[in-house]
Image (cartoon, rainbow, N blue to C red; front, side, top):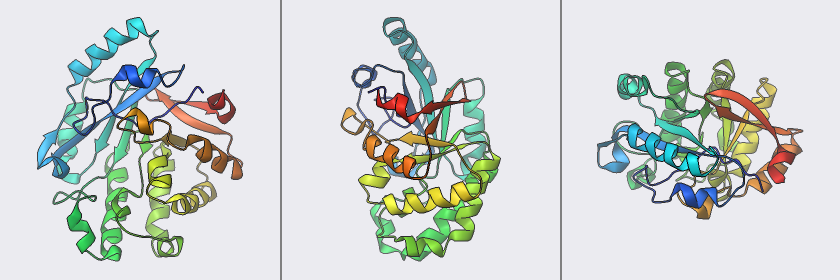
Length: 263
C-alpha cells in the first residue's frame, strides 16, 4: 500500500524512538515526519521541546541520497498564546513541507495529564475549544489542524455533548477553511480513543461550511501505529462522497485519490 501518513514522529521527538528507516519499510511512497515543537512543554516538565532543525535536516539529506528523496520534513506546532513569538522566531529561515497546528496545553498543564480528569468535562471543553479557535486566529500560516479532540480525550464525550459547542466548533472549522488548511482525521483519536462519531459530526459540519481538504494522520510514535486504521477511515470518507485527501509539499497543497493510497 502506498500509504501517506501526515502525522508521525521519530526519535527527533522526545516521546518517540522510531527511526526513519523503519517507517520507510512500511510504504513504497514518501514519508513525512512531524516532530514536536512545544515551548514550556508541560508534558515534558516545563522544558522547551524544540526540534534540532540542523540535525534533523542533515539526517534527512543523508537518507534521501539512499532512499530516492522519499523523506519530507514536517513539524507539529504546539501552540499557546504565550509562545507565539518563540514559535515565529523558531520557524524563520526553516523549510518544512508541512506544518501541523496543535493545542496540547494551556500553559499550566497538558490536556492528557491526570489533573485534567479531576475537572468537569464541560469546563475543559469550554477552555479547550476556545484555545483551538485562538490558535487558528493567531497562527494562520500552518497547513493542518491536528486532533481537534486532543483536549477532551480523557472524557467520554458524546455527539450530543458536542452539540452544545456547535457555535465555537463551526467557528474553528470556518477558520480552517479561511486559512486554506486541511482538517486532520486523527486515526488514533478515532479508533484508539473511540471518537469516530465525534469526527463524523465534524466532517458533516465541515462539509456543510464548504470545507473539502482532509489530512490523514495516525500520530504514530512507532511503526506499530503507522497508518493506523487508514483503510477504515478512507471507507468513512467515501461514505461522505469524499474521494481525495490533501498532502503538502513545500507547504503547497496536493491532492491524492483514496484509490491511489490503496495500491
